[in-house]
Length: 198
Image: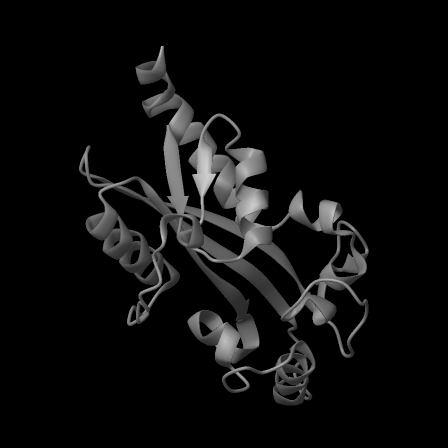
């Protein structure tokens, strides 16, 4: 069986393939899909379903798509679905982090969470499902750590006593919001598909 991940990111494909190791995971590059999909949804779930549904309808294969971002309590859930472009298109992680830190200068409640929604769409079985993964943490007052991307340098995980950017790639992958959503995808596939392969 094959599943298409709605991404051109080779790192993300490897991460997903390591978890869904009973199926072949293909990237958009592998299937020659290059059309841009405008993310017009108001939630992570809507955007993930939009991406997965559009691609699945075009190629008639099972597609997995994700949408994720940072939600900060004192900013009423911002940057949310706008996380990647919160400091403008093509912003660096320094620009993203500094914008958030400036907006939170007076904040006493610094609780936040990374939130991922993965959508699985199978046009052959008429399946359209979403799976959520959340990692809770705190926004610290300055950037720490050289690894990761986006808001990782200011997202502190109490259970690890370090920021996401201070973790190794392997350590981060095992607690990330994407990993937690993928674990649910894996269980769903094992329960609803793997019996068909026997």
